[in-house]
Length: 330
Image (cartoon, rainbow, N blue to C red; front, side, top):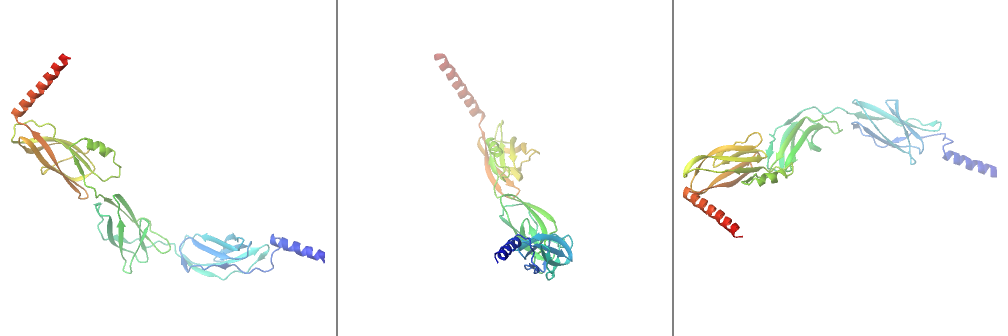
């Protein structure tokens, strides 16, 4: 009696280690499969713990899966062609193999949508807005994907995309994608620069030093203008040499209504006809950037009479003479 009990215990232990296979195995079961899919197809199911699940596609063995300690198995199958497939599975434990499971039919679609995408809205290169709406048309049964955002296409093939914008350069790629994840690849690209910052105008060269320290993505334009020295007998109209430099791109720059021209390096060296009187002369500077932001400042040119200049020269010489006398005293 004791001998039989020991043999029974040993048999149970060996069975637990897989040394003995069960005489019968039920087929494994798939957890709900989709009616249609793209690639890859996710497959999950349950069978006998410790068994091996044999997966068949159209009666061809494609994969052997080890069931975990709870009997679960899973995998992903890749497909290169579209069409209907038939899936079934068996499981094996030792020398015992189950009957095949019920066949499951799945339609595989790996074809991208039709490459039909038209943007009906004109996309600006520059704007001051923080959002932009784009209308368009696309092939049916697809989504318009702008960067990582999917936008629905209605039953007539129309769509509206709201593009959030931030200060600086905004880049967008456009493609079509179907419900199975198949996409056309990038069909269109667009770029919008948001510039809500008006130009800065200065008559101090220090402004250029500050401009050099600004972040590279900054949309702020810096304008530096200087009239230099002016020699004339006013009141009179004269061509005043205007020098300066611009950092950034402008659509227009004027001084007293006259257009100021830049060379290819953004530098200014131009004679501008201005009417000057004795005393302080102020001339309006207007700078406008590509997004339409505008700034107005005034340049002052001080003109003194010849008599005033001579008097100033005498005062300067007296100051120098007093300085020399003080030096001799000490």
